[in-house]
Length: 313
Image 1 (cartoon, rainbow, N blue to C red):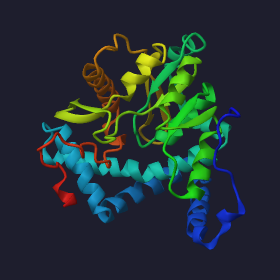
Image 2 (cartoon, rainbow, N blue to C red):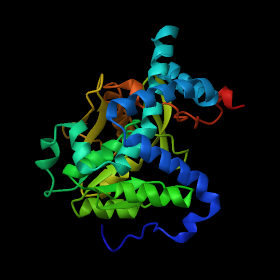
Image 3 (tube, rainbow, N blue to C red):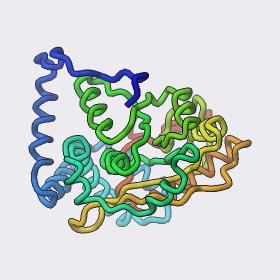
Image 4 (cartoon, helix red, strand yellow):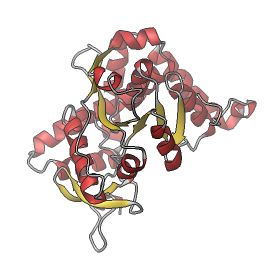
């Protein structure tokens, strides 16, 4: 961690009664992730099934996203994918706790690494823009990767000061420092210094600084041009996708680090966004049920087009 970055610090104000429910939740999370991993996984999947029945709006959003992206899937295939996705969603809560509270030794026991050489052969020579995706294993993957190759994380500060302190503390256990997702200058500076910068450009961040390009079967998906800016102004860093997959059964996880992506179209933001989406699609298809489909990925539409999410009306 550098001295140039100020992070949320613990203060006695966080013990105020208004945070007691949050503290209770944190305590319960800590207790559950202290259990043997097979039990954690069992509880996580059961929680996912309960959430599918109770969180109807989020379930409807996820189902709509799946229908839009995979129109060739029949109704039964969509429903099965939705069920597995909510199992992963339930498990994601505990994987976040695992990332924040587990020791390095316990993390190493349950994580296998694939493609580490794709980072080590480049690191130290130039910056690396690590293309992350919003998989439900996101927090655990970032912790595991930082244990073998500490880097710089990009994040959105949490609205709850207690959660903001806790998530920052957890993420800095294995990474150098954090940057607000709006701090483009900081990201560029990190890349110019040869840092490994974790960046996730796969959500819909609104119309500003976005272009409409294909994402799976959706022909016009609002996609940030942030990757193009970082690649162009960050002294042409290596662009490397990575994703952490929850393995079948109770085998743990595999962190997949792909080879460097070449031929990024630096001079065309639209082509660059489409190129990036194709990379993201490839990674998602490694385990589509583990991707965060609950987000309204297509909430921003071209002018004059109706929302895909009539469920929100």
